[in-house]
Every structure is written in structure tokens, then in C-alpha cells.
Image 1 (cartoon, rainbow, N blue to C red):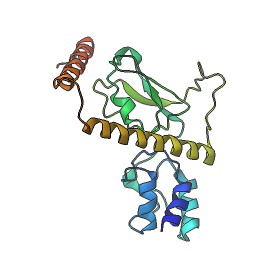
Image 2 (image 1 turned 120 degrees about the vertical axis):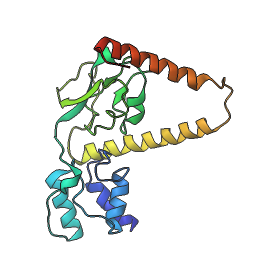
Image 3 (image 1 turned 60 degrees about the vertical axis):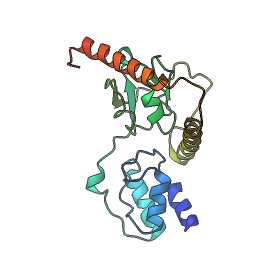
Length: 208
């Protein structure tokens, strides 16, 4: 079963977008291997992935399931930088570390890494992120390369996601461990974010 799941996972695009209804591509591959779900739930993979999975599992080709929606190739997240409050929520949500920045600092999307999964949009408290077409931006990336298509890109994205999961596990362990910090640190941070959100909404003319 693990070998079959591994093979199925190798055909998936590794966007980790969760549109299939599973937390990541590997979980979806394992569910297919257990025959708990069908092969038609991967919008980013498109017809090519559907055909590849059908061939692997000796199943008849079928169209993408309507309930999982569609996917626009060449789409990436774009941050409206003047509105960014530096809360880091989008950075924490990105499964492939395609967003850079620091607390209270403006964030930016590294276009070459972004898969267009959209997972960074819901947690943004000021709605300053949107999905837009790839611009081909390479400024500041001279001498740095990342696979842009095909299996090589999927493999590289998988490695980035696994690194993301390891970091999340480490953060949880550190959070659960006793910490020598004042008990009101979290409340203070939340208050700072709320104040920043209020300022942005005031500039937009929105109600609190």
C-alpha cells in the first residue's frame, strides 16, 4: 500500500492546496491507494494528472469532479504591499515557503515558488492578498533558480513542503514547552495586530 501511495503521490503536482479535501498531496495519494476516494479531485493537476492516475490504476479516464472547482495555471498570490501590516499569518499558512518577510515588516511573495494555492488569502486580516497572473518577476533573484515546470518542480515543491511541516512540528513543540516569557506576551501581540487592522480599515473607510 505504501508503495502504491508513493507512486500516486509522484504523479501529483505537490501544490498542497487541499482542494481535494485532504490536508496535503500525500494524504490524498494514500486515500486513493486505500480506494477511499477517486482520482478526479486534483484541480492543479488538470487533465494530465487525471490521465496519468487513470493509467497507473487501470481505471477509465474521467473529468475533474465539479465540487472541487477549477484551477487557473499561471496564477500566483500578490500582496498589496501598502496595506500589509506584517502580521506573518500568510507566511505561516504558505505550505511551500513562498512568502518572505518578518513580524511588523512588509511581506512579499516569491513568484517562482508560489503555486497559486490560495491558502494565504483566508488568514490575512486586512484582505491585502489576491491571486493574479504570473508577472515573470526575477528582480533580486539573479543566480538563483527553481524548477518552473514538470516533475522536477513537483519534487522540489514536495521537499519544501516537508521542510515546512518539520518547522511547524518544531514550533508546536517549542510552544508546548515551558517558556520564560511574560504571560501577557500573546495578548500584547494580538492587541498590536488588532490596532494595525483598525488603522488599515480606517484608511479604507471601513467600519471596525
